[in-house]
Length: 301
Image (cartoon, rainbow, N blue to C red; front, side, top):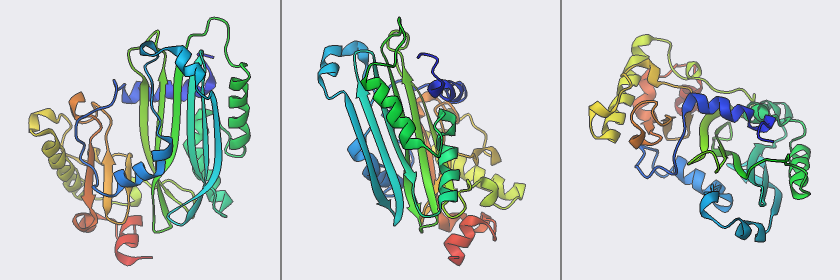
């Protein structure tokens, strides 16, 4: 089980973005009252946490309800989603999975989005529920471990941060894997996506910003300034001020656009996962005039 296909993508991502010990308690520059609020409200009833198995009595875990399954329809920003929540805890493993996936009448767009979000976890976009139920039912029946497997914990949490104008959806994908006998803390990764709900296509930087290197340099310098404010000094930001700071990890809403960075990506670990918010008013001169954001924010098409 330790080499289960389900975890394969996790190790690839960890090699790129690194590892995190516990929860960062440093402040992160974010979009006040918008993204963080949406995220809290959407997952407050199913927040995912990793327990340090070495510091708890495993018998206490076993005594809890070992298998939870919740499958419901939900509306977010007027758009229909299907919520899948599965959780199991035994003496051998703890596995928690939360998926909130689009379920509107546009099945083709839904499928494209779902495939992009979960394909790397070997979950087929056409049979999400059957596959999850099959795996967790096997866990509940005890048919999951090979002889010699050690206690381990895993999490997969995929959910929308917000729906903007009924047209666009911002997603966060969090994945974590923990082998207490081998690690001091979980390996984890957070990835952000922005999708067009009508087409199912992912939105890229090129869909938003003018191609001019000068324009992107200006935006990159602004992001760098915000990172310096976050760190409190310029010496702690080792990323250069430039177009490279316009990365692929971003979301937007009616107020502006937020870029996300992994630990060590732009500065030392003490910065945690920095977030930089740029308002739509500041961004207006630098946007592609026929691009997604200019059209939505200023032409309202």
